[in-house]
Image (cartoon, rainbow, N blue to C red; front, side, top):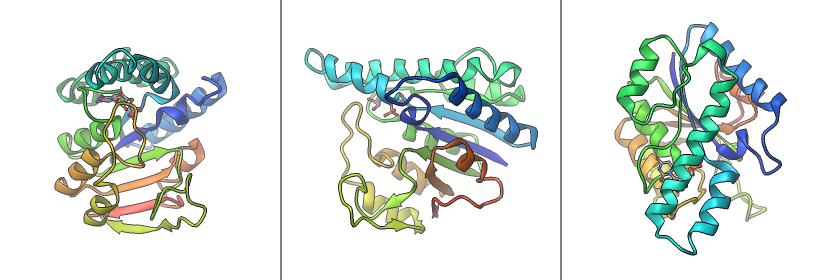
Length: 225
Ligand code: U5P
């Protein structure tokens, strides 16, 4: 299978900072998936690093400049994951899809971050998945699926096990696109998922949950065209 992951930066790089064990666990999961003959692309988010920098820079600069800072954070997180992937990856973070595809064709795992301002790495991952005709997009994040409302704010929020790409558009359509925003899936990503008719799974980004994608035993949300 050809799988693109949107790996939340807050998952890889939590508030407490990076940990050697955690990074190794993620690297081992992706190596295992590659060993099982899957083609793997990982688009890494900016996490806490991006949000901290953006919140200060916003006092001085416009959203586009804040986005540029966010993009650098995503590339720094990408390099961290690459550092633990040995020869499964190349020591370069591609900045566009053509370069990502070249790396994939070298039989390596692709690890990349952002590309251009005004969207998040979810949109990059969805767009990359469309570009390379991936079988599946997996959004691995700090929420364990798509809910009818934000579960971090509403105790009565209900997880949706399965939905269509059109229903996803209704849930995410009105979300903000300001730098560093963190909705479950960014509105542009939802539009790309819909137009590309992309099978998408939203799961909690723990390493063991990511591995469950292969045998379909994860407890996330499945989004079908
Ligand atoms: N960002 C972009 N374009 C990209 C990727 C990221 O502008 O292609 C910026 C956004 O401000 C985003 C931040 O919120 O970097 C961190 O990425 P993410 O963790 O939200 O995906």
